[in-house]
Structure formats: C-alpha cells, structure tokens
Figure 1 (cartoon, helix red, strand yellow):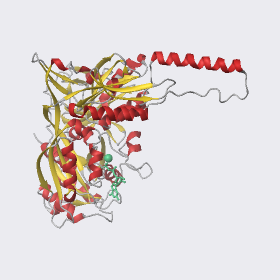
Figure 2 (figure 1 turned 135 degrees about the horizontal axis):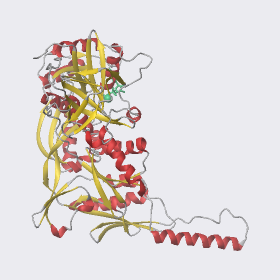
Figure 3 (figure 1 turned 120 degrees about the horizontal axis):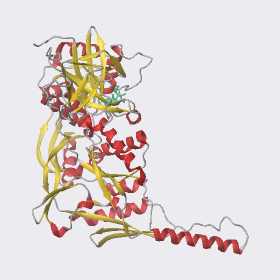
Figure 4 (figure 1 turned 135 degrees about the vertical axis):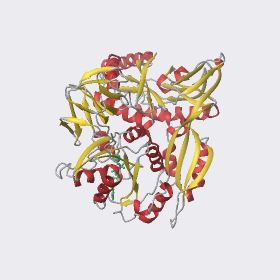
Length: 598
Ligand code: GDP
Ligand code: MG
C-alpha cells in the first residue's frame, strides 16, 4: 500500500561551488525556526573548523526542519568536483533538489554536472537564481540560461537571496508543493540506506540513514545486509542540525542510528540496515567510487603506524571516497597508499589526519594510476612510481583520461583551446549556453584530457587565461596509451623515494631541470654541500648544488682564547662529518609541492 501524501519532504541543495548553498541553508534553518537567531552563524552547516576556515563545504550535512506541519529534511552538499561522491550519495537519499545558480555567475560547469547527477536519480529539480541582492545580478539572462539547460518554464524558476532572505519562504512553499513525498510501504520490514557515517569514541559507528521501508527504534536488533553484521541499536534520532534523540525513525525519514559497533568494517556507507531475521533484500546502494589520484602516506614516527591505520579507518567512515591499502617503502617504512578523488581531497585528508588524529605525516608526490602491459602479457595497475617495472619488461603503458566540460565566455575560447592543447587535450565539440540578450555568449567546450594534465595547476591556469571566468568539471573516461617513464630525484646522492614521479618521456628533461631548480630554492642549506640530481634510470639528466652553510661559530667570540676557538672548530667539523655520513636532508613539505608544479 502506498501512502502518497505524508507530510515529509526530502531534498538536497546542489550548485556550483560558491553559488550560495550553505548560506541559503542558513536562511532555511532560520525561517523555519530550526536554529535560533542567537545560535546562528554564517554557513552553520559547515560544521568542521576546516570548512569554516576555508569557506568551502567538504561534507554533506543533513538537517531537519519543521514548518507548517511538514517535516522537511534538507542535505547541504559540497560543490567542488573532488567531493562529488558526497553529492551523489545525498541525491540517493532524497526526492528533490534545489539547483542554485548565482545570478552574477550564471550556469557553470558544476551546475551542469550536478544537474545531470540529480536527473539520473529522477529527482524533482527546483531551479533557483540566487544572490539576486547583488547589484551585478543578471536575473533575466541567468534565467534564460537555466531554461535553455533544463527546458523548464520561466515561472518554474525561483528568485532568491540567501543573504537577505528574499524569496526564501517561496522556496519552502515550492518544496512542499513540488517535491514528491516519499513513497512509504506500510508494514514492510525495515530497510535503511546508509548514506554517511561517523565514529563516536564511546558509542561506535553512527550511521546516517534514509529509512526506505519500515521503522527502527532503540533496542532493535539490526542486521547490516552487506557486511553481514548484527548489533543492537543504542539510539535513533534526527539532525537538528545537531544530533537529537527521538523515539523511532519511520519510513521516509532521514536521521541517524547509533549502532554501538566498534568494528568499523561492520557498518559501511552504501549498505542496507534491516532487522535481524527479516530476510529483506538489500537496496541498490551506490556506485563504487573510482579513486583518481594516489599518494603514499607515512607516519613520521615509525611507531605511529598503527595509529595511522586506526585513523584512516575512522576517517574513511566519514569520507566514503577515501581508499587505502598498506604500502612498504625502503626509505619510509610501513605506511599506506591512499586513493583520492583529487588534490584538494588529498590536502583535506592530510589536514584532517593531522588535526583530528594528531598525526605527523610524510606524504609522497601524488600520482595517477597507470595500466602496465608487460611483454609476457601480464596486465597490472600501478599506483606508485616505485611500482613501475623495468622498462625492458614493458610492452606498453596506459594512463587515465577524463572527459572535461569547460564553461567559458566566448571571447576566451582561443586562450582555453591553446591551454588545453598544450596539455595534450583532444577536442570533442562546443555547445553554447542559451543566451537570449546575454552581453557575451558563453560556450561549453568538451575536451578529452589525460587526468595527470589537469591534476596540478590546470584549474589555476584556466582561471588565469580567462580572467577568472571559466569553470571546469570532469569525469573518468578510459585508459589510453602514454609514453612515460619514472623520474627519480637524488638528494645528497640518495634517491628520495617520496619525490619520484612518472613523467612523459618527451618532457622528462624539462621536468627534471625544473624540479631540481625548484628544490634548490626550497631545500634548507646544510652544513655540507648538497647535490640535487634528477635521474632517469641510471642517467643523470639534471643537477644542481646547494653550497654548504658554514655556521659562523666564531663570530660571537670577541678576542682570542685560541684553544676555545679551535675546540669549537673541531666540534663543528665532527658535526659536519656525522651529517654528511648520514646523508640525511630533512625535506620540507614545500619541496613536494615544488615537484608537482611542473
Ligand atoms: P556554497 O559554496 O554554495 O555553499 O556557497 P556559500 O554559501 O558558502 O557562499 C559563498 C559566498 O557567497 C559567501 O561569501 C557568501 O557570503 C556569499 N553569498 C551566498 N549567498 C549570497 C547571496 O544571496 N547574496 C550575496 N550577496 N552573497 C551571497
Ligand atoms: Mg557550502
């Protein structure tokens, strides 16, 4: 039996980065009285310090509002492409989506990307032109772009300002009117989709759920279908946006289940929770994520290996796109090869490990994965430059490519094309955003590009050749042949594993030179002369020297106690010897970045 008109509405807010999702969420929480004026602060759903400091949303965040007799569950989502998995998981938990478009920016690459994700899930989309309070707002043009994109009518588009609150009540009314209420099968056994989770030191895994069928309450014996694990529910509740206990969670609702599970592997995002013995079939779950970049992460102190492992396991609960496997390195000892969705993701993971788990880390130069075809027809995927076999054993190597959408004003198309071609891009086609009356036409360029080309500074370059106007979205496409080899870096005659990278053969010389030069600038001077070399195999292709620093130990001494002076000099010499023998140069984190920015 279907109950097609209950009073629940579930929706998420999607948009290009910075188009005002979290700020609109603030107003929704305020107008519905969910958060009092006193408790309110800007972007309240950006709960992590890291999100507040950087002004970006990293995590999806659910919040429940009660308004005019309705229960409205919203999920705020990140806009950056590296956190796309947060968006797709949010979309699977709701029936509708608010699609915001900044009235001064118009439709951008992630507007389109996220719209398609929402359409794939058959969600009801409510388009909103946001930030209409800004003097530079171009409401009419941006509305036309949305109409061109979605094929909707003008009156379907809502106009709002998350800053002033104008038009926000109308959005709430539209959600109630247009977003379908969840289909609720009365009497069916519990099935709850886990769309996110976190670890509570005292109460174990907390699963963020959308209840699809049935109901769940404290004391229930639950069964995680995929993980085949059981536990007893310690508490259920909803997000207010803080966790708020409730007697039970019913079909159609979004909330949390405190599982008490201390073994993190027993409760996975994407799994289905049911009642023990119900025999219910699992829900579809999510597409597995494909990590795009890999980096080695090692604890600076070897004995912290287990802490690092524990931290990664817990972090993975809260970051479902994170993957990792153990790795052993000659120089760095035991650590993990971590798979991520991009460099911003890597930066955030690193920072969270430092802040939330107090770990001191060494992170190697990130790399994409390569497919290796050996002469003996063996096929492997390598995720670290160290795993690249001897060139004599290799028939061919393939690298990952992505399909990119670049949205740019027409006047910059030439610049963009030049940049993309330098990066080995393959042109596909150009579309135009619908632009009746637009000051300047805007194009969507479709290119295929090697993933490695866009990882590092592509986005910055794109911004700079378009005066900041272009935006970028991409998704994994396939593997294609690449002429690459490993570039090693030697510091004081010792290869520094963490600085190795895989480079195009025709660019190796150039990259080697650049890396060596930038290391010369970033490495601190030592008591001895330090040679920095770039090598392909045993061949040195670039070399620089950092001259020794002679600590002027005598300067402080005035006058002449000769014996004291010579003693000091003797001491200094010894120190020199020891360091030279160890050959250890502490490599500061900037040095790794220097290698990347080639
Ligand atoms: P998000 O990345 O989509 O979550 O965007 P945020 O909500 O974090 O907002 C990005 C920036 O735009 C912040 O500096 C906000 O203060 C600003 N902003 C958001 N909404 C509005 C609006 O309606 N009007 C104006 N003038 N600024 C806004
Ligand atoms: Mg945000």
